[in-house]
Amino acid sequence: MKKLKVAWLSPLSLYRFRQQLNIDEKKFFNLHPATWVTVMLEEMEKREDIELHIITTASNKVIDKNQTFTVNGITYHIIKRGLPFIKKGWPYYFRFDTMTNYWWRTRKMSSILKRIKPDVVTAFGTENEFSLPLFKLKVPSIILIQGLIGSHQLKTRFLQKQALLEALALNKVKHFMNGKSIFIENFVKRYNPEAEFCNLDFPISNYAFSFESARQRTTDIVFASGISRAKGIFDLIEALVIIKKQLPGIKLRILGKNAEPDYSELLVKISSMELTDNVEMAGFLPDHADFINAMSTSRVFVLPSYFDTGSRTLAEAMALGLPSVIYNIDGASEMIKDGVTGLLVEPGDIDSLATSIIALLSDEEKMSQVGSHAKKFAFDNYYAPEMVNELIKYYNYMLKTSK
Image (cartoon, rainbow, N blue to C red):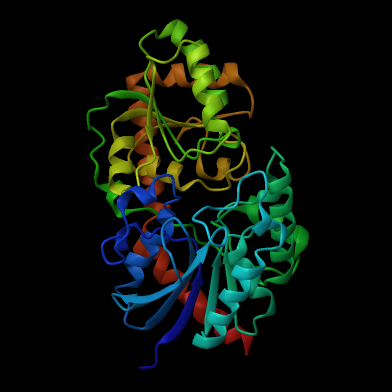
């Protein structure tokens, strides 16, 4: 039987290959884990009908040269990124790679695609370098949308540039996986009325489903995301001041990668508001099982993000049976049914954010009920084996309709 040859242009954590590639574990500090890709890979490794190639980039702090290797039947093509000659990335105030539309990396990815000649190509994300090689391809291609920069309420020069790249991707590619989101579908159709959609969502780790709802919770609140203003961590700290007046012993655990200058400013804010004893900076955990374990011992998950069309961390919190409080933005209301699988708060409403958190923490029965509904929703929508099977069916549909 001829195998379907598939190429994924995607972010990827090399953490699982650290021993094989002889990479010091410390080098993974603060690098995005892209867990949804790893979860999908674990399912793809079980397939005998697919020849999968992963094309990704890695910091020059992690690898010192481009690499290609095969593990469990999947071939990985790793492109080194960062400043030439020195082991540093482009600084946040001078993103030359973004200014040039990721020219060098796009050229390298296109070269690899030309060599392997895939039947189908998948890009993860609209706003980064992974979607750019699709523009000139003559094989069926699909973009798996992780988030939409164009819907972002907090604009920076870097985000504005990414939004331009995103608009190009939305305009030039025909197929998109939209996470069952009507919000995403409507947004894409503004740029591309002829777009077609694969109504699947990114899966989450099966490990998250293994925890019992009765597990002992030792921390009141967990925030798990990048440490940046866009993710609402400063709003949560302001809400914590209000919560502390009613619940003096309140404990917040912050999990996630640090983003400067926001991280340093956050530490100053926590100290100035006399919250040092109430906040645990747990940092970034490269082993995803450790990350899920750290979330699982909390009572409430809070993510007041200004930018998320479908947070995987929120999905994992739901799978753990945690009630959630999030901002009502983008596709959030398609993941959370207010009062049933979590609580929705209008963006920037600090008082309501605090009130909603207090309401859950003060009502054990409500927390248990909401957490139970959230867990069921997560299983019905984010279970990895089913999602991968359906994605492969969509690949075959793309091939059939492209002829």
